[in-house]
Image (cartoon, rainbow, N blue to C red; front, top):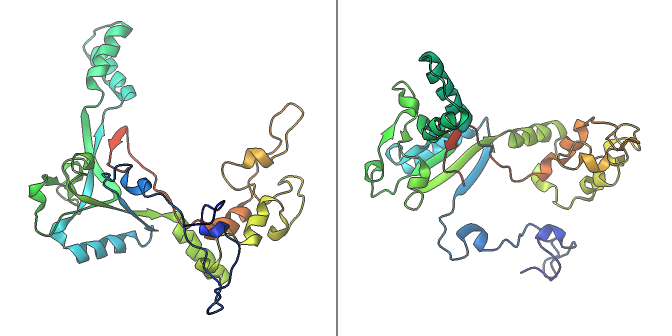
Length: 279
């Protein structure tokens, strides 16, 4: 437990172990149990593992080696017809047959098409792990994505939500951030893991740009945080009409903060509506 007023280890003041004199590592987080398993403890958690995009294939291969090729499958996705696409289908159908319909009838016909299965695919990083005492056929059929027999991957035929209470899914996603952090380590010679989460030099860019090598730049402003998404509107000066004077983003601040991002989030991709079980 953290002392009152502190939410995580990074917020605690520096402290030395009274027995061995070693500086404490402030890496603890007070995350509620319910975040992972729900208020009733009945939620099936996902296990998210984020890798560099250049290493993702090796991570998947190791998972297959560890659990066995017959017990690891890519999580299948189902692409369904979206509302705008359905309206396009209706209009094309009527045009090809020389028919006309009012908007209400077009909406009725389109509503019948929305949600219909259009294609199948695969989750960008989701792997379904089958218990060693079972086979995949005990849970669902399998297939090649989009019924392509030449595809290397084999996916679950059903989308993951229909099986999530019975099977474990590993989200082993590939991201650019770990790749960039490694590149920054190679260029600077600094191990990102050694930079404390409350690093004073890094945090100073929110109040001053001195650490980035410039101060009070007429375009970039007083702080060094212009490249950080979500806060640029708070730091850009405004014109007399209330609009922001500049939209320039400086990459230096973003690179300065790269080691801070220990966790990265996956982005869901897909055409139209895609049910991929990523929760």
